[in-house]
Structures are given as structure tokens and as C-alpha cells.
Length: 249
Length: 249
Image (cartoon, rainbow over all chains, first blue to last red; front, side):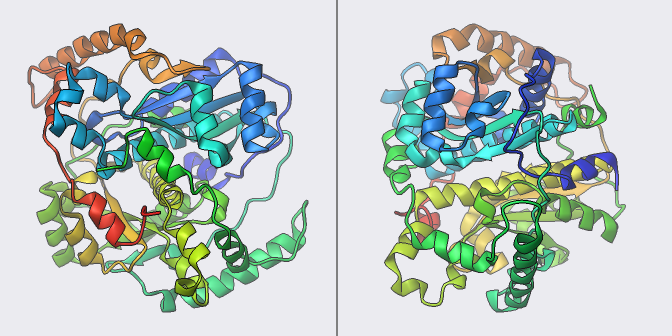
């Protein structure tokens, strides 16, 4: 196993950070690395917003509910962005083909994928420098407020945050579903054939929760998922995205 | 700059591969690395399908039109997958809350983000071993055929491919938009304030295309984007995704 794969496999989300700030050099390395990720047809359909303003951090914390929004040394917000492409055209609103394309589900997917490729490079760059990271989908708990706080124009939506800082704890690495569940060959493996591996994983997760160094509990993955999906959450994301003129054609 | 960031910044898409196959060890390292990426609430809403069947490779090549679909040493296909979660529940179709959640735009985004985080870890793991990669969004040129070839059930859609192999060329690294365009602080930077950087980038891209080692041309990024978006493409993705019972609530 080489050093890079070792770093990838050593990932755990960090939710407690020391007070040590990031250097400008570290931030530059993280953003430059993000920008080097692949992007669909070089569209670069994303924007990263770095948060340094403490009032803004507090407002974002109130949406997320997670303390590490406030305590992270640096907070990056990743946005799917087709506004730039919209503005390049002289009269986009008089060009129905241009608009149809821009507002299609295909381009929405492209922008989400582009932003995510960049974010994962940012995450790895940070971890390579000994920093810890935690993704924050919880900022979508109030996606309209998340959007408004950043003054995002039409054709831009906020996706998630990435909290970065010097780790102040070292949680255990969370086990994942067995490879046999996630990795198939040539054709989709029917759920029936995934079942035994999921059962095995439920046992692994149950042992992990019972024995991990903090926050012990009795639970399985299957039960967690069933409980989670039984409660509709963030159902307003759909109308919000369409109001931002994305994902609607 | 550390070794990992050096690898991230050294990325270029590889479209020509030698005949050398990947070892089972390399494939295992790539998939295990993919699985170590962050995932929203541990949902792991994705599946990776590895292609070894030459007939399937040929069929996928016909969708994509890119030779490296056939010539790659290994081809991974990344799918957004909420079928697993659907199947965990005993009677999902009699549980409207469960279905509403699963079929929401929010969960569609989660599944696309999860798949993409995993894919970027796979890409970096491959590159860390000296392999080259190329993302293949072109498989969405016929997303229904892409789907049918893999026999994907409801609540699963194919997103893109990742061609992997031993590089047989070393293309120049493509310049990206200046950091000032992509990275904003605390608030979205209006397009007017991005404009001068985009103009600068157009000059950079124009020089790059005029002087690069192969496939020289005269073009700018802005003109490429305007031409690209003037022609609606993959407009069937929207109805396809909704037929697969995703992104519809």
C-alpha cells in the first residue's frame, strides 16, 4: 500500500478541532488541488466559498446544528454553479436552446458531479497535510437560508460544507459495506445476492458501535437506514432547486 | 508541496493506454479506496460495476464513441443507487413516507454525491499507482442503453465511467479558471467581478491550444462553452431519471 492509498484508507470524519488556524499556504494548496480534479468538458460548473466571517459561521451553525461548523479552522462551501455559463452568453434568456440545456437535469447532474470531484480533492489535500475534515450535508437542513446567506444568484445552489482543521480527537474508522455489496462485475448483482453481505455488515457495525472508543450504542446499519428513510427530510430541496432554475427541463 | 498534493496537481486525463492489464491487487486497492470516501449519513448510495466482458465493453464503446472505453485496462461504471435502501424495508411500496424520501431530489443529490466522492477516491488511488484515468460522461449519450446493458433495477441510475490503465501518452495539463473565479470569500462574487479573470483565462487557454504538443487549435474557453451550451444535449436524462423513480418528489 503506497502513502496516498494509506491516506485515503485512513479517512475518518473529524468533528473536534484545535484552535490552530490554517495558513494561507494550506488554504491555497487545498483550493488549487480542488481545481485540478476532472471536470465535465472543462465546464467547471462549481464555486467554492471560503468562510472567514464569524457572524456567517454562526448563522451557518444554526442551520447545521453541528458545533464543528463554528470550531473548524476553515470552512469551505461547495456550490453547483451554472450562472457563469449563463452569463457568458449575451442574451441567454432569448436563447431557448441555451436555457433548456442549462436548466436540464443532465446539466444539474454535471454541476453536482463537478463540485463533488473538486471537494474530494480538497478533502484529500487537507488530509495529506495532517488536517481533518468533515462534510456537512446538514447545511441543507435549510437550503433556502443556506442560499440566502451566500447571496447565490439564479443557476447556483449550495450543496454542502467541508469543515477543515487540526484534529483534536481520533475517532475509529467506520467500517463500510463489504466490497461484494458495492462492487459488481459486468451486471448489477440482484439484492438477493447482496443480502448475506449486508447481514454480515450489520454484525460488523453492531460490534463496532458496541466497542468503539466513544458514543457506544446498540444498532445495525439496516435499522439505522430504515429509521432514517422513514422520516421524510429536506423535501423542500426539490422546489428550491427548480426555483433556482436548475433541474427543471 | 507534499507527494499527495503533487499527485493531485499532476492530473491529466489519459485516453491512450498500453496493453498491460491491471493486477487483482490494483483493482482491490482502487475499490477499497473508493469505499473509504465520505458518504452522507453512511448511506453509501452507490454501486460500482467493473467491466471485464469484451462484448459489454464494445456495446459501451458504441454509446460513448471514445476508443479508450475499449482500450482501458479496466473500466469502472459508477451508479447512484437507492435500490439497496428500498429493498431493506419490508413493504416500501406501502410506506408513502419511505418512498417520498427515497424518490426526493434531496436523496437523488445524496446518491450522485456519494457515487462521485467514491469515484474520485478511485481515480486518485489509480493515479497514485502510476495508472492513468479518464472520466466518461459520454456514456450518458444514451443513458437508457447504458442502464439496460447493466440491468439496473428501479432506484439505480448509471452516472459515468472511469477508464483506467497504464498511460501510453502524457498530454499536457489543462489550465483551469483562475482561483479568483472559482474561490470566493464569505459571499458569492458577482459575475462582473469574475469577468476580468475569465478574460485572462481565455487568453491562457488560447495560448495552451496553440502551443500544446498535439491537437493544436484556435479557441477560447468562453467560445467553447457558448458553442457547447447552444446545442441541447442529453435532454432525455430528466425523464429517464424520473422513470427510474428518482428525483421526482
